[in-house]
Length: 185
Image 1 (cartoon, rainbow, N blue to C red):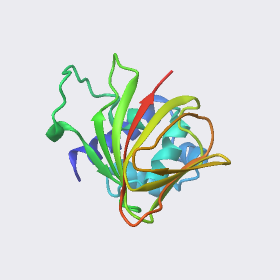
Image 2: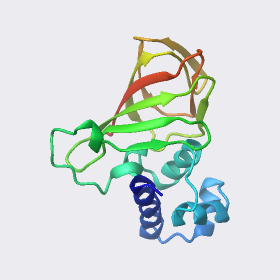
Image 3: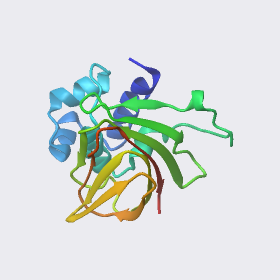
């Protein structure tokens, strides 16, 4: 298990315990089986992006907060080799935390790389109203926000407040690589 996966598992345990939720209650709130939640918390399995989305929604925190809210980053300069990378075991999606969530800052920036043909779907926003600014750097990406579909090509930008279910599909023959800035209210 990588340090990031270990930290993520610990963070999920801490969030659940802070709310005094037994695994059964978290399972009810997320629709994820108790056995799966237990394996995730022990670090025996890595959660998918979809599962992380359901957990973030249940806890009422952003995805960035799941990946680093406990981290105290005082440096303004964040070298590439210090940026954490998480990979979705189901889709191959890679998430690099360029500027992780930390105290004193409302925004985070991630680089996402979604393999060709892969789709990530989130049933609900983790925190309704989060401001997003997505810039597609390479490839083709279809973004579905509720009933609205946006087909992006390299260089396109999309900004929105996340209020509904959402999904992202790499529709071309190459990976869709993008930068995403998320700003908490």
